[in-house]
Length: 90
Image (cartoon, rainbow, N blue to C red; front, side, top):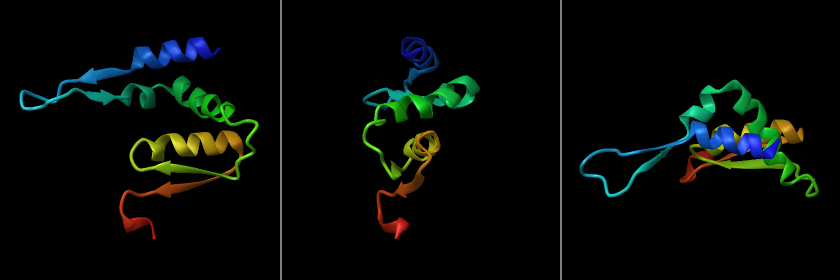
């Protein structure tokens, strides 16, 4: 199961060249969010990494953490807290 998920994640991922003035490519995980089967599998797969830890909350950093964090929290049956890069979350 994990190998199939990894293959599906790789297939839905791409690197984007933001233009001639860029010094690097940018990761694009948008394909992950468009695929219902990947969305259904991501939370439980990440939660399995912490099955023995018995977390009580998932903390997700801005950007993709706001997408992945709730998926993991739901799979663990715990709450979710946003982590902002500045003091907006106070």
